[in-house]
Amino acid sequence: MKKTLNGVVTSVGMQDTVVVEVFRKIPHPLYRKLLKRSKKYSVDTDGKSVAVGDEVSISEIKPISKSKYFKIAEIKSVAKEAKHS
Image (tube, rainbow, N blue to C red):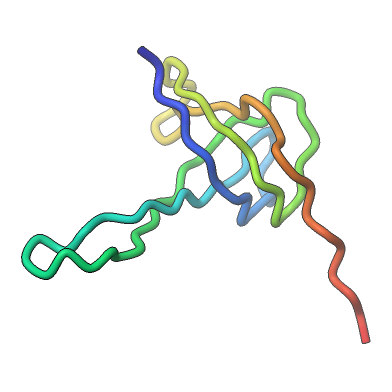
C-alpha cells in the first residue's frame, strides 16, 4: 500500500523538485497533550506547476534519487499571492 500525505510547499528552488512540509499531531506519551510535529520531504513535481504556499497531496513512488521518493499526486489549493505594501 502506497503512503499518501498532505502538506504545504515550502521551497521551489530546484529543477523538477519541490520541498513539502508535512505536519502531524501526536499525543505526549505521559500527558496526552497534542504536540505538532513536522517533516520536510523532497518531492518530484511530475511536470506540475506549483508555488510556495500551495497545499498538495503527495504519494510514495520508487526512489528517484537519494532523497526523492515522493511525487505530487494533486494540488489541493493554490496559495494566495502576497500583498506588497
